[in-house]
Image 1 (cartoon, one colour):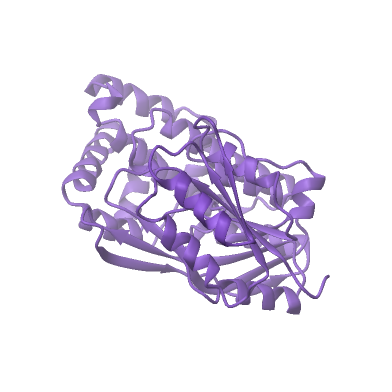
Image 2 (cartoon, one colour):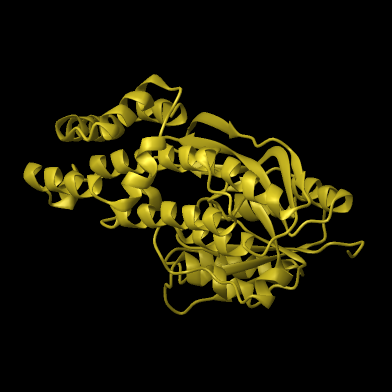
Length: 356
């Protein structure tokens, strides 16, 4: 590989005037300097377009591209892919920030062990409505260099279990693989990252996993994409689990461990969906929620995975027990309790979420 590695950072920008400078400056302050930043203004209604233009006019390694109309996260990233020149590309959210040694750590890992993709951990930073940081959790993977496809197959499942496979911003991808295979982000809500990652990892033969948490992922008390009401929440996450299973089946690596990991995730999505069904915007009466869970109990994916579900956490163990028994009443009650906790006791909900 080349002695000097150039990283491309694609940063979609939309309505993040309060956070954009911190995000961009955290990249500019990297100790490793051979990089470029592609700012994609997705027709942001605030002052972000002007901020982007100001950066582009003052830094030779920053480009700004403006969308004339809002196209969404996936299309903003796809636009950025057309302009990159680096050997590796990463996708950074414009309301997050990175620690100054991230690029150096990635660079050093590639010097020691060439890879098609580099994965690292993150800090989940929780902010209240006053923009005050009140909790921070480390999602730190075990460092490992995968030089064979068989190793990658197994590590992917471990990364998914740790909550780190599904993001695009905690990875540096080989641009050669992306360009040769024409990989792009699909315009689908909530699972655009995992969809892209699964497609990319099908072509990856070497993987570096770094045991660092240099990316700060902001979980804000304000309205965010993940807190918005998404009517198709269950359907897209059902698709997510199906895609993960299909990838492992294609790799001939779909054993009991893989089924346990995906089953536990699937159980969480089911109860998260039950909670969302209690939202007034869902427009679901008690009888409709009852019919909904009955239909879930009949699905092939439920039969394929839930018998393998398990957890050491007492609360999660109880939830899985309820699913295995197909207990409709308890399922609905738990969904209602989760909904109340999430909306009325947010700090408790965050703690429970971290211990799942």
